Length: 370
Image (tube, rainbow, N blue to C red; front, side):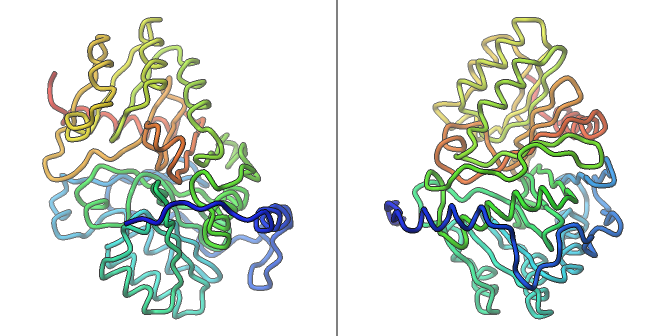
């Protein structure tokens, strides 16, 4: 059973404020303007990959692939290749982990002298692979919270961030529909490392965390990107604002969708003439009493239940006007907004929107007819 959340001392809060305002100065970390080995070239993947820009790459899982049942050829392979190039530091925030390829890559990096540290959802720390990581000497901090440490991100050498909806598990990579995004940016890496520090160093999770993302709006190779963390950044406000600004189309892929505020915003744009199409996970839509599936379909929207027969439709994606993408670990739920540790990435790029639209069409075509 989880331990209830306890109040943090005033001393720790003051110490955290001071520390987060100080520049990173660890001797083992070089100037963040220095490119890391992982930035030299995009790492190819044999499955549903797309290089949308030199600083941003997108990868998708494919549960229909023949070799998926052999646990080969998935996006974990590009992540393993990136971890193999790590030279200084690896920071991991993982909701769950049981995939041996990721386990081995983390342990191998640790053996090379790379500083590897992790935070995890406490309830998912009891499997063999996590124990083997601990036994190798890699420290892991559990959240010990009522909410979920639901992030899935890795920061490598303070220059590269890997995030998205993909858990580091056999099901997450080979059975579920997921996306993995790689962003090469010292500023985005600083954002995620700042979030990681709150959890790993100060044991601040969920509502205890402090707002103050260093670079909430930045540019990666000319592409505007916005970064939000939950609960401190109130990501739903920005998501709803963008939905309300949609002029032509809203396409979404939602594992869990219970936020009536987001649902109402989508319905409102549909009533204004915006075309709405969506796919929701079948099990979640049928078992959750608060699901937005019924309100959306009753409003006449083209929202379908997924057709993945072996896993989950686990995306958390909204595509607006074929030029804005909302993605990350953030389900469209009240828990994601107020209780869980989550991250949201918003990208303003027709090229990246095209990659996500291709994935949307793959999932939509396999979805159950209404």
